[in-house]
Each structure stands twice: as structure tokens, then as C-alpha cells.
Image 1 (cartoon, rainbow, N blue to C red):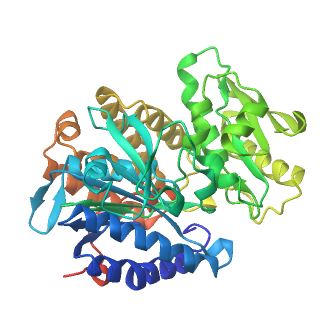
Image 2: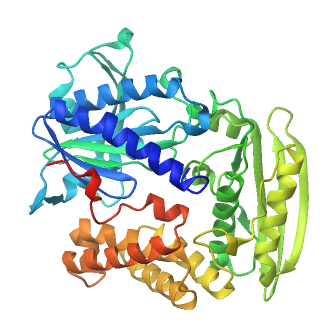
Length: 452
């Protein structure tokens, strides 16, 4: 939303912050610790108050959204955790904060996800129901976490539904932003991430729906899988910018990586009609991209193309694909891709390739790979100082190192040093803001959003 209309999105975000969140937080005796770009950190001294506040926020926000056109609706996810925190002055961090963040990622758009420790305290104290999702392994937390979704439906009040049922009827359409809230520490992120239950969003959206499945790497060098993954992610981002097209998130799409799936299976699980799949082959300076757009209702091809060119043409090849897909779906392409014209992008091929290598290493989630990912991101930024995506990626990695002592040690830093680096890279990313910039928790509270 920020990429399409940065100022308008900021105005709407701050209207929600000041008119909805701050009054609700105050009513339920919470404290807005800080804002972090598109996120806020909230602290409560009662876990019941935390969940009660979350419920009222989502109910009122749904009413407000009903009066707005779809493109102006901000839909939030909320995560709640009860746990210990580390207090430094007015700031808070630690695993208690991190788990709340992981909960909001597992919430549905317009919904609330809570940890098992929260559920144990509130399950009989509020007029809501719960859906048990079972134990989930979450990023940077060693032990699995019990996860529950709050159900805002009177029919299941004060009852818990087993993990095998779904809640599509309660899903709210629109791209989701995230809030995480806890007892003792509440962490809130407004972020344009979609949840794993993407089908529940797409099922109620009237726009043509599409998913970009992970492209196959057909290069002789299997280590070049990062190119296929990077092109998949870039195509997802660019197609999502086409007005009138609903595109499933990269996270949901990559659950199908290395899986042989029928179009009907993908369509059922993700709630989409169109499926873009393909492959990438690179041999020296030459590359070939094969792609086809499938209509899941017929399993027939709507569009298919083989694109040949030099690696130096990769931006133009991606641009051509986006344009032809828009034409095939009879959608209007507002502007050509032209990576350099997109804030946060680059025209430097070496910088782009270094960034893709870093991205692939970061997503492996192994400590030794984090160190290498940082090196590649730093190389990308050294090659192009205006490469906002690379600066935002570094800001995110150092922010996580600040929050997680284990990760800061792997990077050879104290948590204070990691925070300093995160703030510096975030400042640099702000000069060329990219979608990644808006997803990165800002390091410093904004003066007009602080509650005393």
C-alpha cells in the first residue's frame, strides 16, 4: 500500500493509530512502548486486558473498513503472548517479544492469534471462542509453541475448536497488516504480509486471483537455485502492483516448492484461479525462462512463453513477462517494471545477484548462513549505495540480532552493537524505500505516536 500511495497510507495508518489503537490501549491499561515504522510495541499488565483490547480493536476496525473502498482498507493481524521480557529504560525485548511477533504472522487478516501461555489464562474469561492450531515451530524459537486463533463468533463462545477444522467463514478480505500484543510486553507490527491461510482471503476477494509458484532451477549448477527463487519473488512483487489483480504472498506460494501438485490442488489450498509456473536455466552469460499461466478451472494454458536472453537482460525479461500476463488477463499495466524506477531497486546486475544470494541464505534459517547472507547483502549495497532492498535486508537481520542474543553472538556482536547497525541501515534504507523497508520494524519511536 505504501509503494502505491505512500503519503495516503501513512495518513490512514496514523488515523488508525491515534483514533483507534491509542484509545483502546489506554482503556485496557496498556502502554504503547514504541512505534517501529509499520509496527508498534505494546505492554499490558494483564493478559486478559491484552486479549480484550485486541478483540475490541478488530471488531471496531471491521466496522470502519466496511465503509471504505477495498483499496483503502487496512486489515491488521494481532498476536498475543504471555511471557518474560527484558526491560531497558522504556524499551523491552527478548523471547517474550519475539513470540508475540510470531503469533501475529499466524493470525488471519482481521484476526488474533495467541500463544498457549495466553490461552491457558484467558480461555474461560472472555466471550470468544478459540481454534487450536497445535504446536508450531516458529522462527528463532527453539521449542515448538502452542498456537490458538481467537474466534469472534457467538456460536463458539467460550469453546475451543480442534485443529482439524478451518475458519474460512470468519476471514476478512484484504492485504493484512500485523499487530502483536502481549502481557508485560506487547509487540505490534502493521505489515503487508499475508498469512499461511491464503485461501480464506482469496475466496472472498472478487479480483482475478493468481499465485506464482516457485520456479524450477534447470541450470547444470544446482547452486544457482537462488536465481529461480529470486525471480519468483520479484515476479510476485511486480504482479501484485497491477491494479485489479489479487496475488498470493511469496510465503504461501513457497509451501509448494519441490512438490508435484495438480492445478486443482493448488487452487483449492490457496483459493486462486490462475497459477503461474515455470523454470529458469542459466548457462554462462545466457539464460532462458519458460513460463506458463494456467487457469485452474480448466487446467488449460492462458498464456505460455519461452524467453531467451543474456543475464544482463534479466530485468527486461521479467518486465516482459509481467506485461504479457497483464495482457492475457485483460488487466491494465499502469507502468513498466524498469527496476531502477522502483524505489529500492537496482540496475546493477552484480548487486542484484549478490542480493539474491543473500536472500536465499537468509531464508535457510541456519546460523552459519546468516553470516554469509550479511556478507552478500553488504556486497550488494557496496556495489549500489542506492539499493534500498539490500539496506532494508541488513536492517532486518541486525534488528533480529538485537532482539535475539543467539543471533547477535553468531554475528560476533553485542545486542547493543546489533541495534546500532540496524538503526544505521534503516536510516540508509529510508533514503530509497522499498517494500522491504516498510516491512522492517523501525528502530526509533516516532514522536507523534508515543504514549506516556
